[in-house]
Image 1 (tube, rainbow, N blue to C red):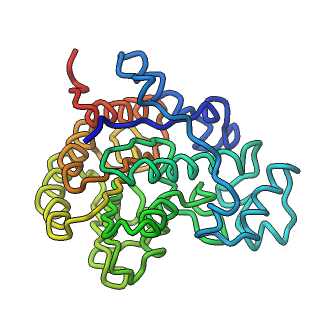
Image 2 (tube, rainbow, N blue to C red):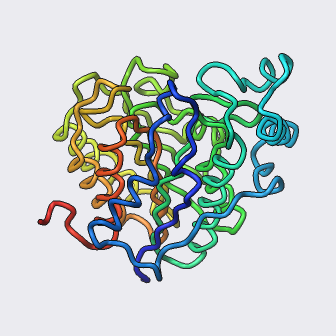
Length: 314
């Protein structure tokens, strides 16, 4: 198997959702800068993420919605009708300068990763993981849903079954709902109980092809380790997936302001290390994370793990 590939983009360096928005912080650019600073960057295995096309985005999203997001970027404005229909410009989904090009780049990066994964390998795209996006509306800071688009691209290429593991503090509702009842995709989400979007209750099966672990506030490293070893790994071994997609939201870390979980970077790195061997094709995405420094450490360390390095080493 070839060495892992890293996908990034400079669009995230100066793009913010708004001065007071939780995503006013740099995340992808900070993680990439830390990877370079640690000497872990290999230009020969770095790919600049492309912008997804209207046709690519419309594989899952309503073309009228995609055009509405494009228009919002061009005019920096949405009508009351568009705001109400597509949830743009409200509920944490603001109109901002790169409202189309930024999420479309995350989607283009994920789709480029799937292209690379037609052959066995591992790709890390920290800009991805926008798991709340809906076919015709924005949700939870997510305008498009790149994990869904990536999984659909795998299925279109005849690569199945697909195992999707979501480690974000928030339930991966958009991905679960997209594959409700689709026997080719098993979605698993480990998230904080009682936190927005208040779905993914313990025992919820999403048409039979989902598993949900809604955990209590204070959820810690040993508890995540137990779920990984006793549930996530056995589920993957039973499924024998042709491809694995891991959403690595960093908002479950102890120093993140958007959850009450108590995880360390080491717990996330260990989970990825144990899961990555379950399939010949692995896509590792980012997700939530609202402390720029903890996000940078988490995602840079994930890249180190995928590249066979010990991120804890001096």
